[in-house]
Length: 201
Image (cartoon, rainbow, N blue to C red):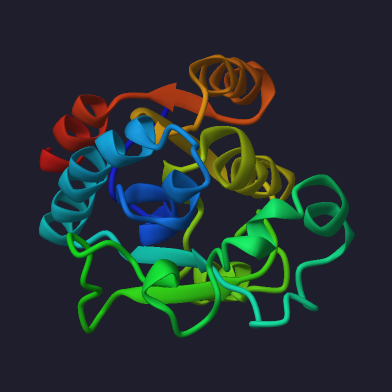
């Protein structure tokens, strides 16, 4: 397991008000956002460690048109209630990153309308231009956008690390199952402390 700063980037998945704020759209729908909110300081610690070590940081945001015509078939048929809550509509507070994350001048922000950060979002192009071969992934939600991104990173032959205590989900069972699934074949499952110690070296 090679964990260092060489040719490495940190991908921070969807740390948005929709998922990580007690007034976000998911919480308003009655979802338990506590794990997602709890992931905020851990992700912040990783961002700080990345900046200190010179590791590029890529933030992703999932955003949709107000009419939701860019959301595709899955959310329309499986989770249509999100439209009623106007979740993650582009240009709204709900779609913004939480206040703890203000991208710096050298950071990247990638908007997407599908779970994976690699689906028509430009993430792969950024990583290739930076000559990155290893990605560290944190954020929310563990079983959706994090796992989709991790699987796609693995498919593209990036050495991939997912940070177990800097991810969050709306359900503990889905969180735990997703980490097991990712760790079985697609990524090394590590902790914030593992990353911070490795990058400090």
